[in-house]
Length: 89
Image (cartoon, rainbow, N blue to C red; front, side, top):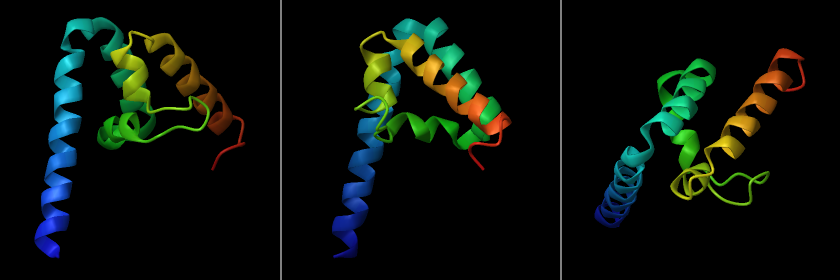
């Protein structure tokens, strides 16, 4: 059973890596998102890209792959403003 879980985890990480590599063509836009993520969450911020987001109805990386980086930046700015205002702890 442990081997199956490990294999599934490796497969998921490989899929995530492939998605990140696909974003190389839009380095400027993705760089802006990654910079905001790093400022907000540190080095683990990139993992946020792969979590389904209720506000977006999809994963942030899916938006980036469709060239919709501004929606991600806007969401991050809203979260950041909420944190600064004490809405999110």
